[in-house]
Image (cartoon, rainbow, N blue to C red; front, side, top):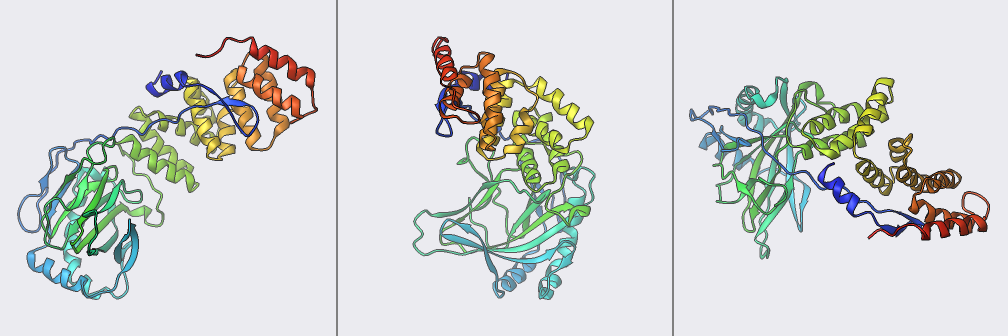
Length: 414
């Protein structure tokens, strides 16, 4: 039994739900701990010096732009108009797309002249990385960012909160502004302590590149005006969609869970399944549960059989906790699919709650009756109110009295 499943069992309590009756209150699983895999690789930059690799090999720094190229690009960046696109508290990040999905954007001829050769070299360097997992990975977006200074901004730093990129497979950032110690791009080594940060402190013109699963962010000093170039990579055959999967992907289960949930939300269930398998292989319980749901959703005989097998192997408290999460999030059909065919009293009671959310009160009453007859006390309490109020069937005072008395005779949960 998993650690959070044990916590679930110890935290089962009775509570009112839907203004009538009692249901099981089950805590949703905690976020998985971040870890950084290691695949030692060294690169050489255009300046003829080796790229820097930090000890955990979670990011790499590629020297790319010469000082004259940095100066010319920064001068050009300061002369163009940008669109405010990302909010940092009271601040905004201003951006300008230079290149997207294989083509330079209109009105970027001056940037093309300066950056086409460095971009080609950056692509060449990245293509040699084992991080690409043998995929034909190419730059899908190349854009300019501007972080504005703020007079009297009290907090001292403007933070792009720790996050994982969800629509790129590899990412890179390059400051065009003179570097300031402990400012700019940072990584978070431990997802359980988001205040712990490791800054790359890369010189201007150096690209800090990282994989899809790295927890990272950006901080800038209050009075600092910072310009940066950012590049995102995707498999070349996935440019048309934000949802994609790279065969061979491994790493942080939470990152795989994020990608899978995004794919599931967009209806790309087969892609979601692949990402959930990545996390499930790492032993992540949430990914295992979402994998069951993704298999049920797709519905082929083979997939349903695998889903049933995985559900059978999973701890029941975990399945019920997941079903409650789905129900609370109004994913009614998903919760119903997950629980259908489960015959334990606890599962029947949870399924009855799902039926109530779906306004199928007659079905809910039948499930509560079956669960109560099997000794489930929460179902007995629920059934009392169904019978007293005529929910899902006629008023039945005799049955209400019977189930109230039966429930009162059961041992209490301490």
